[in-house]
Every structure is written in structure tokens, then in C-alpha cells.
Length: 217
Ligand SMILES: C[S@@+](CC[C@H](N)C(=O)[O-])C[C@H]1O[C@@H](n2cnc3c(N)ncnc32)[C@H](O)[C@@H]1O
Image (tube, rainbow, N blue to C red; front, side):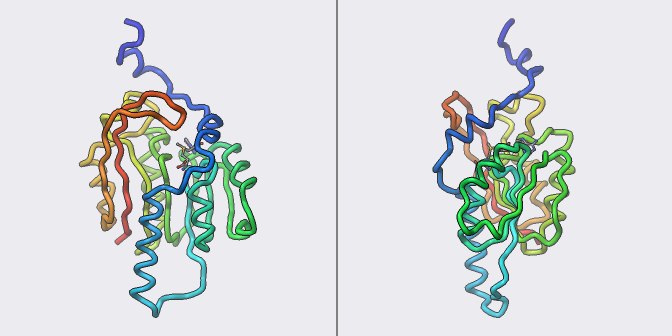
């Protein structure tokens, strides 16, 4: 039967990211990023001995047109912004002001990305589910290894009831699987969101998300 779930499970998920970038122009940074930044700030206030003027270093993985990268730069962070789409990096560079000296960019797919060591934060807002599932375990290992002790991961994963979880090229997790992924971390936020809604470009979608902020042990 045309359009049934079993037919769709053979479909390749395709996105015109350009349309997404146009739709989210001017949107604010993600709450997960703001929470992680707030937690770093609390630590800085609590531990004034370790307060230095050296910029902290973040990787923005799947940065898109840069809503989170720009926020990090405004907070004085050094950022390596990574995306598989050249257009994302072009748009990010076009929206920069003088904060650009703290920014490095890289066009790379998650499936073959190399991440730096001793990173203070890996931010991956609404991007990791687009890593091919067979490559996700290796990507997660790279993220975990790239973070220093006390560094933070923030971002989203899709749950198993998300309407895009039927696509074989989309990565999704159960809550139990998310908890296993987060074993090397202290969990600071693990919020599950589930409801019918729309995508940024107005398509109907059933959302099942995990919003995560976690501090590496
Ligand atoms: C939904 S957008 C999120 C962008 C931004 N982080 C935000 O919160 O608006 C997902 C981003 O991940 C990138 N992306 C998707 N699959 C990718 C892959 N396999 N490797 C690298 N980047 C990928 C897309 O190009 C896109 O910019």
C-alpha cells in the first residue's frame, strides 16, 4: 500500500537545509546551550581561584546558520563550528561581526569528523539525529573523548516515537539508551518532550526529543 510505514522505512530521509536556514533566521540560541553556559558561569562564580581570562573552547557540531555559535562568541568563547553543508558555514561567516577572530570553521560530515582534544563544551543542537545510525556510536565516542573532565555536552537526541525515527538514516534512542550514553557524565538536564507539532519549515511532525546538558565526570 502506497505511503504505509513499511514503504516509508525504505525511504532515504532528505532535507533541503537551505530552506531550514531561511526559516530560522533571527531565532534565539537554544535553551540547552543557555543552560550549559549558565552552569559554567555558576562554577566560575563559585571557584574564583580558577577564574582566568583565557577563552573557553567550544565545538558547535552541526552549527547550521549559527544561532548558537554567535551566542558562544558573544560570551567570549572560542568556537570551532562544524557542519556538513558548506552553505551553513557561508551563512555563519556572513553574519559575523568583530567576534570572528575567535571562530574557526570546518565543513565535515559527522561520519568522518575529527574533533580536537580538551574541549570545554560540545554543543550539538538538533543535529546528532542526522548522523547515520551505523556511525553514531563512533561519533559519540569522539564527543566524549574530546571533552575535558568537567566539560559539558549540550544538545538533543530523537526518541523512538519521533515521526522521523522510521527513516533508516536517522538516529534515535530510547530513554534507557540515552541514559547509557550519559554514563560518563553527571546529568544536569535530561528533559523528554513529546507531542504533535510542526517543523521549522511548517511540516507536520510528531516530536519525541531528549534535551540534554551533561558534565563529563
Ligand atoms: C536541524 S539543523 C540544526 C542547526 C543548528 N544547530 C540549530 O540548532 O539551528 C541540523 C544541521 O546539521 C547538519 N547536518 C545534518 N546531517 C549532517 C551530517 N551527517 N554531518 C554533518 N552535518 C550534518 C545540517 O547541515 C544542519 O545544518
